[in-house]
Image (cartoon, rainbow, N blue to C red):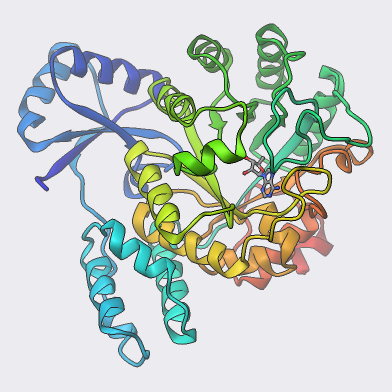
Length: 434
Ligand code: 5AD
């Protein structure tokens, strides 16, 4: 592949203007997470080919675009990796793949699949340790902490795996009012959380108007970053929500295998889901996706495709969790996804996508009390608290026995994993000493 260059801008809106100007002048561009050496991963950079570098500089200069800079896009290497693996009992194929990781070469689908199929204890250890090194190299030791308010469990979709699907008997359906949501937002603001995730089922009650009013109020009263996770919407709606102030959007692809996607989503279409991801990217959202591990019929090859999708789509944040059978759903008797496979997927995603945020998911914590710690040691770098008010929480059982991640359990996972708390958290003394 020829050398790529990346253009780093001062703001998302400037980046979007620069991108459309370049595109209009026939420069081929790609939007990717900002490499961590140039800024925060949770922002977007414009990638261009070497052949267009001069042209792009000219266009930006003529358009009076002051950008932060245009830099060669270096793929991240892991120097010293082979040396560190020299005493490990690993196969020749594993070694060859690790050599590519060391020198920063892209892995093929076959190589990704090979890593996902690794089973021996020493190879697993080598895989997790390598992903952990890559995580340290890219994002360092601080674990980002975000918090979700699940503000409505009404949903008009019937995804077969989901415990709040339409048609599922949920103890109580609830909708939080704007004031109730704001109360939760202020509480998070008080403890120093910087980004709130607003999640719900696909609930038409929260019209564009209602959501925009809420977003503006959160910005006005707290200036917090806002992640929306309210499902599939139209381009126009995504655009209006972005303009109102939403920063990030979480819409998981769940699986890129068309047959499995259809089998688990009676109301959805994989192509539309991909289209949504593309729109979110073009609109300048920090784009969060993810998949489930252990879906019916899913093979390592399918997970490899999911990982390649994240890379090609320039996804910023990737949440990977085991499938967990939810009581009362058509999938309640299906076997649970494996923790080990989930951890392998986390590790390989870190090695392939490198410059991304990977949360240690709530689903992992729900099936293994040490699940989040293990994920943090296998490539993950963030945690999401569940900050839905206690009186509603138990009704947001997207899967059975969903664990409640509060600040204390997050602090514990971070300490257990030997990692650092973010400075912005305002903890009381007990929590800091833990
Ligand atoms: N098992 C595991 N994860 C699930 N999710 C929903 N239902 C389940 C389940 N039964 C995950 C999906 C969804 C996110 C909100 O929760 O990945 O995107």
